[in-house]
Length: 121
Image (cartoon, rainbow, N blue to C red; front, side):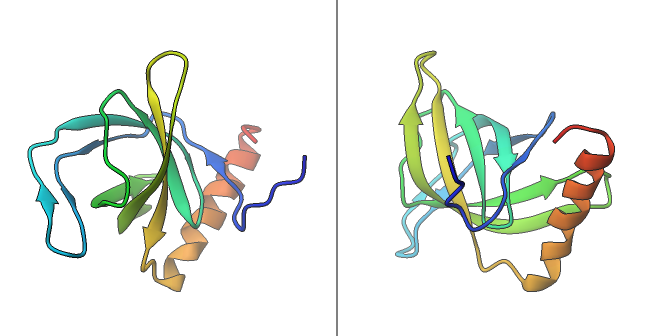
């Protein structure tokens, strides 16, 4: 099957994040959410993660994504755009990065090259 996504999804190994608060553009905020998440993949356009917490769609959160070495940190705003309940009662969420500056695109290229060198792709 041909990939229809604009950007290649890259697997993530041992990246964990926690969502403590969510917000919407109309100043609606959900605080103290404390939703542990496990990131499954990342691309130039977004993040895919799994959680046991029911997180509403259409909300945003601040994320710090570390790819590869410790120097490659990307701080961004992420919008939750889809979810899929899995058979193991976890929920997969698809998110898009909002307002990502083009200068950060090279971080994804470097991460992909690092994965290829380690034969992880």
